[in-house]
Image (cartoon, rainbow, N blue to C red; front, side, top):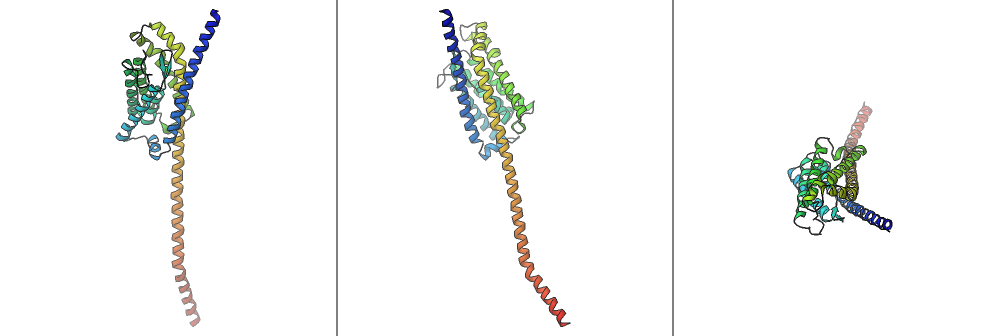
Length: 281
């Protein structure tokens, strides 16, 4: 009887984790689709593929990225008395795209909003829980990780390749582990009756896997969109160069035709005069 009850508990526990991962993947797929669509706009494409950004574009990107991070908190998946989300990969990605200021700004907005879970449960009821402070600090740290990748590892959208993408996904997974089993456990006992050891076991067994998988998959999807944007920008630049070359050739052809139209009658007149003078002689 005990064996059967334990087996049922394990099945329920496993199904909850799978449901959480499925929800995170669905959220990422929706975000990926929206991002893929907006990156087709010329201004978005230019921003993502430019190293130097104006102050206005930096502020706008921080606000948009911060809003997306807030939505990631609101639409997180409740799991075993806490919630799982993909805030970290969003903050890191923003740092890679927009630079250190953008990464830290997005992480700060997302982190501060998550910390408000100490006093309210958010618009969707997914913002509370004893992990609010730890998750908020971790989100701010994710923004710093994105800034570090951009500044210290010289990693940006323009120089992405499969190796660098794999490296960023690995860093995201490592930060997810730090988030769940290093930053959160010491803080949870202050906001619940759980002990440090219980917090560590609880988060490690039940929250770690969906958080790491969700954020790693999210980072992979976002970086693939970014790399595709760079390829599209290069293709567009080649097409513009071809159009310019085509225009130059068409202009030269018209110039030659006009020259022939002008010089043809003149040449005929000169030849005719030369023949007449020869005949007279």
